[in-house]
Image (tube, rainbow, N blue to C red; front, top):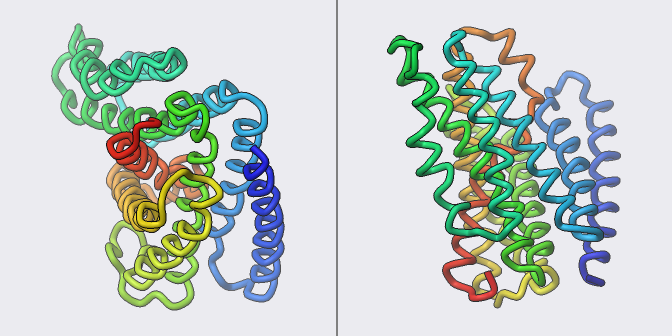
Length: 304
């Protein structure tokens, strides 16, 4: 607990420094596009508040906060879809799945938690769309909805399960995961913005470059090596591998959700611009890093 307080205090100082540096850079370079960086700074403050409550008070607060985050992320995902009146019922069923998914976490029913959305929701979700609604647009509607549930609810819900699965280490592991994920995103964005030349997938995300990806892996791995003795029970080898794993998974998350957004909003530049600061942009990496890191730890360590 004492190490957590010290870590949160250091993070607070780091956030204050990052905020000041961002304001200075924005003032000195008014023609530079800092939209992505501004979004990331706001995300850091939001995450810092949530995890202060989670680690210093009660894990139920964290669970409830993450459930609300999943709801808004899914809601914004649905707002990007080209929907018909027939799709409203399937959206309603999707929202009902959110409290159920987090309830399995609350009662520590891992078996149901891990299969509820990938199996039961997947099999039952088409029913409200089928009954009396015809076949027009069925596949796109159901598959797009399932994608949203997998990323925004199933993926993010793993953040809440860390503390339930491991009351001793869970809060610090979440802090470790979020710190590395956000640091990876920030380094990738800044390097790509200033020195990045080789676009990874220019059609989906202009901020993702090969130079940013490589620098992000190096910095995230170095940060993992620095923090693991204070926030995790891991040895040096797994501490270093954690940085690599989180960096690669975070990159894949950012890339995948960027492609999803551009596919859903293809030809609608006005809505694309309006949704630049949405919840999806803030949690895209965590939707991938959370489940990947959770299951790797659960496989190799007994405390999960």
